[in-house]
Length: 390
Image (cartoon, rainbow, N blue to C red):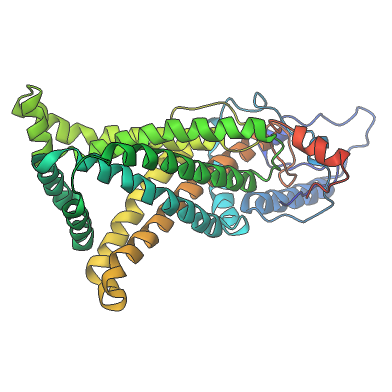
């Protein structure tokens, strides 16, 4: 974590949002000459450009608990209320901080935890499929054949289904797989919380009895939404038609569903990201937003990156020739890593927009943390035991 501090009393003259919060000079102060004023403004403009680009000088590292960071009600009502110049500066800082915060490394860690939760989840799916019977399995196989990104995944699903025999132990396997998958997924959320603290440049001050319920609660909510998103994707084409016929829906309703499900899916995924971005960091943001700018940005970036990666696999990559039967697995891991980078970049954008709100409230651009901490009890306990607060 980097804690940077600008000399006391320094502000950016050309930053109108910040300048509005700086008191005017005392009446007894001698006015400066025109040349001195121009030089000061020129130096201030240079400082503002450095702050907008995320380039700041590293000073001393104060205790995060002693920094007078603005609260969630300071400055504009929300990051989206910033002026155009502030939003552009936040975008510049986002891509610079992407490298400084080691987002690609955090995305790799999240990919690892994601893979750990996939296999128990697959056990749940296989167990449920085992209880569907031949007709249900055939319907699922046809649906997977329509939406699977590559033939390797189709072959894998067909192999798994062919190996599912009987239903005697399917229920128990589903329960065990569900519990293991839930705990593994909570490991992903815990890693995301640590990554969010790194992005917001705040220490983890919440004790375990507070972070654990957050971890479990977010896992449950996001897990339900993820299952709903997967169901929206799966119930398409012939499968949607079959289900529609069984529940009495006509062809028009099914066609409407096949069109309307995509914007619903985008909103649902954006809401998932908004929950992650709000609950994870130990920083008081401007409050929960049903759809955050970073969430929308992450969804759009994820869709574009996934489409680009699919084109790359179809036309340029030779994963199957290089890795043989593991080609599909390698391609999936790369795609999962790219997806996590998109999610983390959305969190970075939300963080830099919050920094812009703090700057507009008068907080120095290069002083971190730039938001008030949600909890400092863990830091106080470590300080009492003589532990460093790095």
